[in-house]
Structures are given as C-alpha cells and as structure tokens.
Image 1 (cartoon, rainbow, N blue to C red):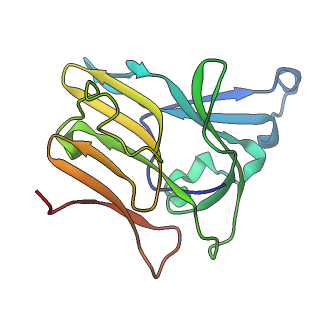
Image 2 (cartoon, rainbow, N blue to C red):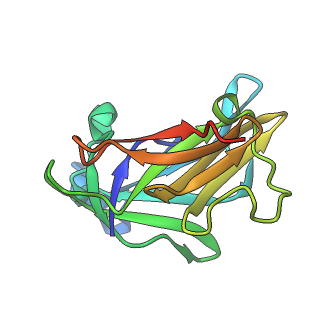
Length: 181
C-alpha cells in the first residue's frame, strides 16, 4: 500500500534496537520512530487515548526526523493499517520517488479544524474505507490520526470533510468541507 503523509500527530517517541544500545554510535537504521496523537494537558502534550495507535517509521525507510517538514506530501510504501498487539498501527517501510501515486493519505485532524468529532455516532463519523489509527481527547480537545483513501470522509461538528487529491501533485490532497447540507 502507498501512503502519502499529509500530517503528523503531536507526540513522537524513538526506540533503538536492543542490541544497538551498546554501541557508542547508534545508526539510524537501528532506530524506529513512532508518531501518535496527543492533546495539551496543562502546558504539556499528553496522549489521552480513546483509541491508541501509532504510525511507525523505520530508520532505514528514508524517513528523516531531523527535517520532518520535508516528509510532508511524500509517498511511502507501507503495510496496510492493522491491529498489532491490541493497538492500531501503520508501518511506513520505504520512501518512494515523487511520481508515486498514493492509495491513501495519513492525516491528523484536531477539534479546532473539525469542530469536534462525536465518537458516539456508532461509526457514522468515519467512512468505512478509512482507518482510525489514533484518537486522543481531553477537555474538549481532540487529535485524530487517520489513513484515508481519496474521496473518503470524516464527519465533525462543522460538517463532512472529504479527502480530495490534487491532480497535478500525486502526493498532495486536502480535506475539503462539503457544501452539501
């Protein structure tokens, strides 16, 4: 599956392979970077999961944590989203060239953008082909990480947002608020 990154969650963690921890110089290929959602609690970002999950970037995938802004709108070869060890996960395996056309997009949405998402709507808030990776919520704040194919939707208090690809740039898409009532 090919996934373009449109946005990241607020919380990052890094893990180094157990056998690499003894080396004085840890190689990037022995490192994994995990991204998930979070919200401000007081003055600190915290994971307050309603649904916990991660986007995992292996060090040898081409992911560059030192210039994260350059990873936006880049297409990666990925494993399809799945449940692993009881948590939602999507594994980003390899950065592809600029001409790669994604099957889906990794996107993160906040309550400020959507007006808030009502999870109690028994699945009515997310298109059946979209995948929930992580959902954090606390005190009216929300951050939701999704993998969304083109033309799928997510419903917030402000309305329904559709994933619209940009025809001229394969790795780029936008969540557009529907004008339909």
